[in-house]
Image (cartoon, rainbow, N blue to C red; front, side, top):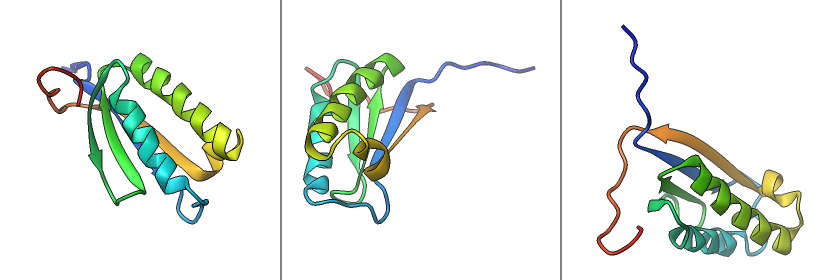
Length: 107
């Protein structure tokens, strides 16, 4: 018997591509992480290597899409539209276990 279980939430691993760091890219990654915390559907954030990687948790792929659109805009303003694919890695996956939002708000 097969069961189809809906994910509890969605995760996004957002990081700098190995060897592709540009001036100010670590600071921009931090800014994008702070932007996530202000978005509807944001559940939480974990930081990997400082200034290189974050894992964020979301309640829907629609919330991720809205955040990604804002993040792409910030990156394009700083480095040009092609930088999103050249400098940053963005991986989305379903998660079975998710953090519980803090009382009184996201993250």
